Amino acid sequence: MPKAPKKMMPATKPTSPTQQRLWLMYPPRLIKKPFIWEVGHKFKVVTNIRQATVTDEIGIVCLELDGPRDEVKAAIRWLEKNGVNVEPVEISVVES
Image 1 (cartoon, rainbow, N blue to C red):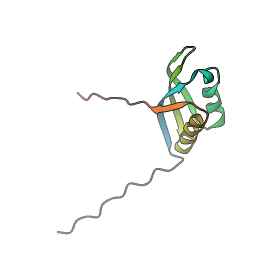
Image 2 (cartoon, one colour):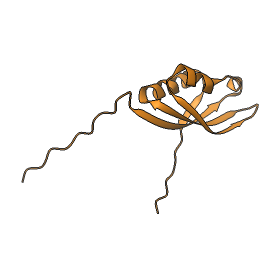
Image 3 (tube, rainbow, N blue to C red):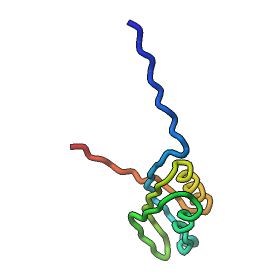
Image 4 (tube, rainbow, N blue to C red):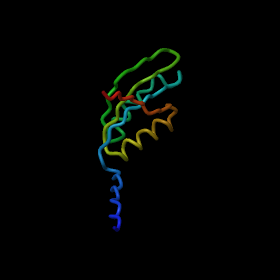
């Protein structure tokens, strides 16, 4: 019996909506810069601060970015280019 051809998943379009949750880590010299405000104005993304800790030594922010996939990626690249360490949030899901 011949095998049915495999169905190819369509490639994700750059304009497909996406949501990404990220950890942003700022060194002391960048703590006072308004990066989150700038990201929301430079790119077609919605920012949502989920958690934040800021001291004189470090800034750590859990940030959600919602928007077209290419805009979210561009926003992340811009943050990294400006000295912010960006890491994805790994969410562990417990199934019952």
